[in-house]
Image 1: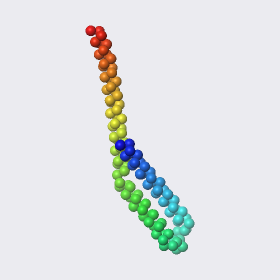
Image 2 (image 1 turned 90 degrees about the vertical axis):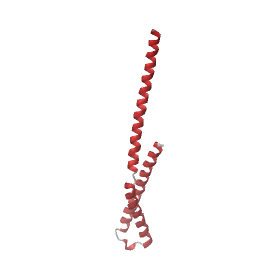
Image 3 (image 1 turned 30 degrees about the horizontal axis):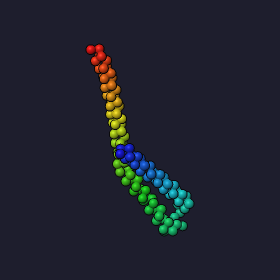
Image 4 (image 1 turned 60 degrees about the horizontal axis):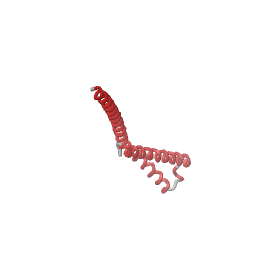
Length: 110
């Protein structure tokens, strides 16, 4: 589940960044096409550009405050803790096998 949450957060951030880059390219192309003279643009086209711009302005602010970075950092911390625990369990198991090995040798000597 942790991997799925981490992947979802990374996908969400990447998707928004990709959309934001596309929107920025759209706005740059629109500005270049209109040469900053919006008098030749009909109201509906200008409204669509404004709504797109507003969406990403608000979305960027929301994304920054969304806590996704904190969720990602927490997932990474938990994964590191799990890895450390897995290594400790492996060491414990190896120590137990070694203990059993020498315990068997001692038992044969008695």
